[in-house]
Length: 96
Image (cartoon, rainbow, N blue to C red; front, side, top):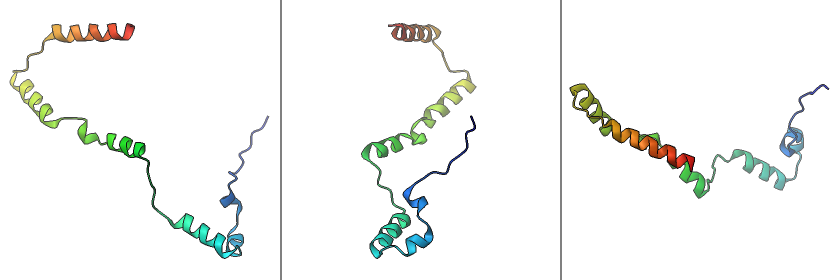
């Protein structure tokens, strides 16, 4: 079976420029207004999702710099038992 691509069929794509120019003034006005607007109104949920994409809030650069300095100075103390306990607790939560 051969699959051949077919062009998308939309009312606007099926309307030729000549047809749009001979259309009624009301139809021309609707076409011109719909194609010339550059404004989009986002929903509240979309605006909230967009604000969550702000990557500057993901990393606290002051903490990162403090950790770098502590590592470089040899002052960073890592509590491996605390890390292990947290990992075990996370696995237990996942297995529930």
